[in-house]
Every structure is written in C-alpha cells, then in structure tokens.
Image (tube, rainbow, N blue to C red; front, side, top):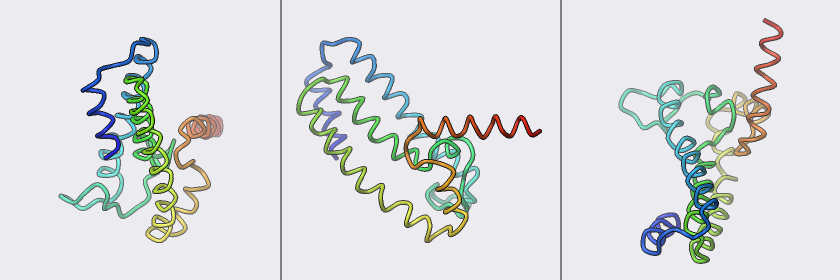
Length: 154
C-alpha cells in the first residue's frame, strides 16, 4: 500500500530536479523488476510446482539462477523499488513512505526463513548457510567464488 502511495505521489508531483538521482532511480527500478519478476519463472520451472498452481506452491528448494545469489529475490525487489521511487521523486513524503515500507519489509522478511525451514527442512537449512537472504552483493560474491571453485575442479 505504501508503495502504491509512492507511485501515486510520483505521478501527481512529477520527478525531482536532480537528474542523476532520477537516473539512479530508474536503474534501481529496472533491477527491482528483475528481482521481482524472474522468481516467478524460476519457481514455476524448478520448484516442482503443479501445473496450473501458483508459483508460490513450490515443493522443493530452488537454488539455481537468481536463487543462487539471494534466497528471497522478491524481498529484494520491494525495498529497491521503494528506494527507486524516492530517488525518482525526491519528495520528502515519498522518501518517508519508502522508509516505512522498507521497515515493514524487514519485519516480514524475518518470518520467511522460519516458514521455509518448516516446509523444506534440512535442505533449506543448508541453503540458508550458502546463500544470503537479501544481500545480493554478498550473494554475487559467494556465487562467483562457487563458480570459480567448480570450474577449477572440473
């Protein structure tokens, strides 16, 4: 709801005057779109989802593609989107709404791993050790190290 408010205010008030900040906002928006949309495809394809079922109804841990970089890409997408909207708008109200949305996402994030451990057990516990929750920079670093080690041993 806060994100929709940010979007509405951005549309109503227009973008901010600092061009490089607006450009950074558009870049973050694009990154948020990747983190928000790609999981839908990956979970349906690799998550053991029954035909016609929601992508959220996975039956196995997915640890490839974007899920090899970060455990919760859609939890990355929302805060990125909130920051992007704040950068594009540069309006104090939009920034405040984005900050509130970010805090709420952090609170909700804390419950996701516990639910997934209940659902997937040890496979998910192992996954938690290998892949960060939403720090995609650390995730890219760890992924690059795993790829390098794998290619050296091949």
